[in-house]
Length: 76
Image: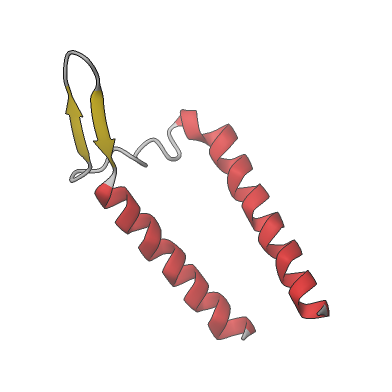
């Protein structure tokens, strides 16, 4: 049970750090490419629009999978 508590605290801290980086650095160009990659679907019309970031989802998924693989390799 002690390991699960440590894991939850570390996951919470990691999410807080990621949130702060996106919050303070998101508008300044650090992550301005996120959500605007070639291949993201954007359809805009007179009465509204539709947006689905297909390629952004794939990139974020690949980055998180690689990060989790590194964590498992070194800590598990």
